[in-house]
Length: 402
Image (cartoon, rainbow, N blue to C red; front, side, top):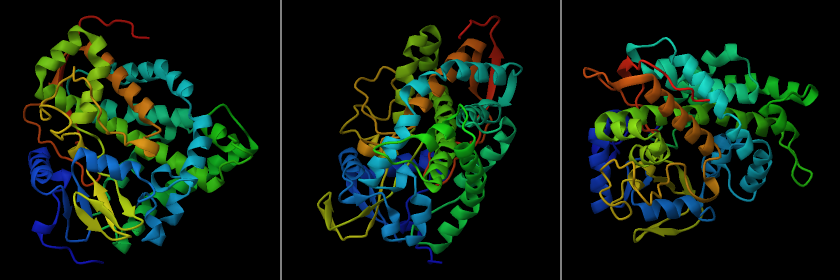
């Protein structure tokens, strides 16, 4: 294992809290927009540079196996780890099954699940345990056609995945830890993929294994890895997004009051949460050739880490960037990526957040973070808290949201 560099050559981890991370990112945007850490990873902080790295697949590859061959097995069918033309082929196949119409048809079920989870809670409780964990994992498991009884197992896998810290992308132990989590889940999903080939059903796994573009279909490995991505990243994104929404509205109670008074503002508020507290802190790319960023030349096969949460706070793009503004227009955040790698699950995460906020405001006349709560942030890669302890007071009536 690689020896850790001194702390002054390390980026702060999100687990140190937003009061540490966000000021550091602001200083780096101003003074050192491209910075190399003690592991040799180049960190990118400004919006324009993050956008450039995100969209230029020819020079900034998502395929980490070019420098770490152990990643190759995980990359099959994983849209986040492939480049064109393979990425384009996978996305076309997946898009024939995971369509906007499919997502739009889930709204009623999302309302039902959210209302059921909140039906008997009041007073002090952990919103993560009650809602932000179980709702998205229930929705995505039902969409895939997986047994509801296994919901706890999926949540456990997501928690274990979030527990993997990766300061050094060259660390050989990194893949061992990933495979320990993903291998077991992959075996579980492989059984369902093979079953759907023989016994098709009305679910997304069946749609994925039968989808065809230009005579091609997903292999078992590709279908398994995409289902794994949906179960893990798709679930985690909504969990973090909803938790971050609570943090934003607790910090800005006037915004919460406006949303209660006018639920039509909720979609814009969700977009501002995505900008202000982006669920995914960073992505990783690898240079394919010599490139220049912020006036500095980088050699081929360099790890580059664009900071999404920094780009979305860039004062050059977002006036008064450190203020949460539910009416911010335009709001060209890149919380879900940009270009060809724009998150395929973004419409579902947005819908789950909009529905959850509507139901929460309808059900509770008061909802705030517990004043004595000690918030614990997740580690590298994501930006959000592990639990959201709240104090709530129920409304005297509830509107029908379906």
